[in-house]
Image 1 (cartoon, rainbow, N blue to C red):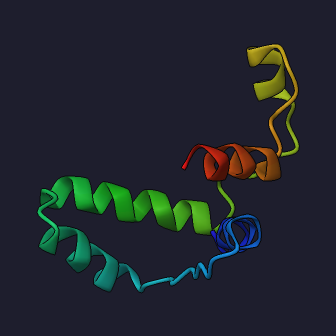
Image 2 (image 1 turned 90 degrees about the horizontal axis):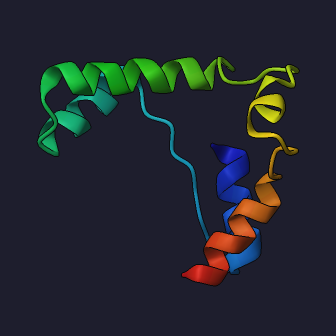
Image 3 (image 1 turned 90 degrees about the vertical axis):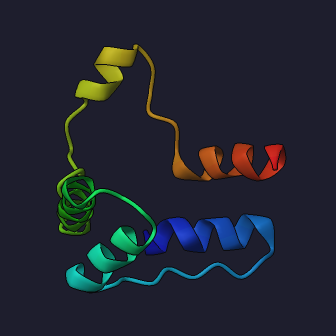
Length: 84
């Protein structure tokens, strides 16, 4: 997420920071926002997995499934900043 925040900041010209929370603090924040406890636990578990690299792969499976190259992060952020 730090890479994503840095890219958004670079392209938008606005400061963007990424703040990692301990799992218990993140869970409490989600509960305070009104998420049901089971969904909050699922979200925290998913985010912990992502922070450990669970979504990173050298596989080309996604490219084969969608029939085109993956869209680079810089292009995705540029489109979102332009649309905002």
